[in-house]
Length: 299
Image (cartoon, rainbow, N blue to C red; front, side, top):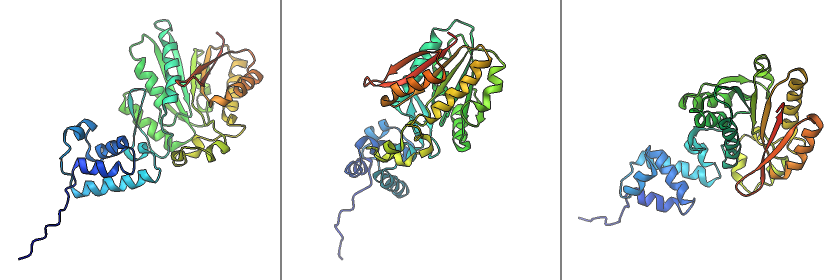
């Protein structure tokens, strides 16, 4: 009788991570495997010899191949953490980025300084996954304010994701399909309440997109990234919409806009031309670069 002594290695957590980390970052390998198993990274760390069944191994290797080709990790796991909360994402939404947390923090601080009982309208234009208004709502839930939240997007597919995230985090939001402020103008203006606009609109140029050192960006929806007029076309349109409001109504409006650091002078000039009677402030990101422009009217 002939015995086959060839060693067939088991598909253990330790082995799979060892092989995967030769192709991608170890953290990514962990997160992918945790996703496939429906377990936490802590489980992987405490169960390195756990044997994985073949169906899950096949799925893991499929996702690993996608990751090595440049597919963003968030699109593979369908999740992305933002400002301490987990958000659902897919190919129809921009992946939330740490830079955008600067905007959320600025709005939360503004609301923290607002008088108790104040009624405020918050509008997030180009909402995507809805991470901005939902994170703001969660962090201000214990404030004694009455905040009505609206979220608009020109993509119906993106709004489906926003609705799922709002339901997941139990945040009441009025969703509107359309371009920037257009779908909410009548309901907002008639209230005559102070309101806050948050906008992380497409702001990179075609050249920046094509020459990006991050290949993952090409897997995200281009329409959520690139804009004409040196990346400021949609912000120009937004400011013109706001101009129509302030011409006809006396309102307290504060608009928070995320930008590329190279655009601060350009957007300041743009705002000055369209809305000259404004108060302008620029917040820097953690690397000390201009990141969020805050424009106020009626204050």
